[in-house]
Image 1 (tube, helix red, strand yellow):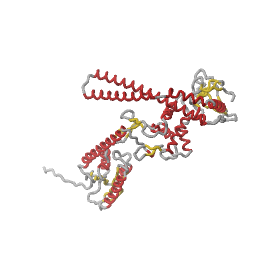
Image 2 (tube, helix red, strand yellow):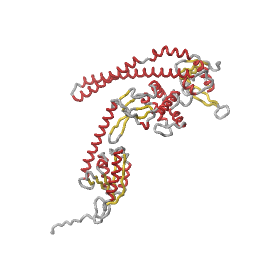
Image 3 (cartoon, one colour):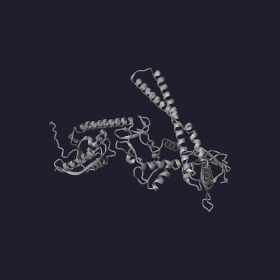
Image 4 (cartoon, one colour):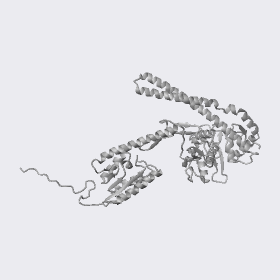
Length: 532
């Protein structure tokens, strides 16, 4: 029996590129350059990278220059927003690139998973990567191990930087330092010391938005009016949207305060942010900058925002009389109805929206718009005739009715007590985590502290609501009196601005009993067909 003989058949193709090994073919080479900020010095580095790799690739006889793919001002912790990187990978997977050259592993990706998965996909398609700083070639047997190590180090560096930045931001928050995106924020400019400085021209727009809303206009109607008048949005655009108006109406910075850390970054890799619902501390800074809107006006707007909600008896802003005429029988609002819509007798009337709901219908009458206007003019002129005595009565009782000093003192005390109890709860939890405590005793202690915290919180909310209500009533009454003092004589014709600024609502009990409740709480009774 002859001995077994083994003959080696040499490889004739490169196992990664599948090209014949005896043929010399130029490799199609691209480069990737990225800087993570848009600072001037970084952009200089970016331009230098592009120039360097263009010249470097073209200087090699065995390389064919394809392109330098770039991303400016983009973080490397993820690839979702890196358009240049994604385009480069797509081209490589399509077979247009044989080699990708980049400065370092951290320039390529700081996310270990993204880095390895991308390199493996490129490797499967015969595309190699070369990291110049670390001298790593991905087709090398040790390449993936080195890349794993270097990517992990880069990712850890990103995590450390992210934590340092987050710590710095929270330290600024705890110190009460306020910062806003001034290019998209109406009413303020950035001062020399970084503080918020009032921009009076833009502040006029903010005051107008609040004024229109309190008059009864909806955010949609306000947005439409501002667009028609050519007023620019906070971002400098021509068209306003209702969501932009709403964001201005609910932003506490317009009353001179600032709530800091409304959202936070959940993961430094994905950069995903989340609305802060108590997961991390928030900081409320009172009187942090000059206000555009008084606190009382701001609080009244928040109240109006809350009551204009969907439901059977919601407030509506579709017309001057929407949610301004109330049924005396059921308490629902009157709505408009069109009679004879297709003939010459067409007429718009107002009647209870729920007049025919249920088994027993409301007995309140319908009213046409001209009747409502005439009744309003008579009631308003009756108020004008008594404005001096109304002012005197207000001055006599305003300190007693609207004083909030005692409530303010109680609120400060409650806030301090709540902070102490919250710290005690945290200490209780930490102690239980470190030391083996009797769990029955621990739970009893914890429940007692939690119950105490809830009681303080409930009382704090009640005190805050009482302060807000008093301030809003005072502000509303003073604005009403200011409107009265503007008038030189009686009203002779109906005007929507007068209606919005003077009347809270009208209540219809019958044609003989229609009452107008004005902004200061005074009620004037009239009837259909009454004398002027």
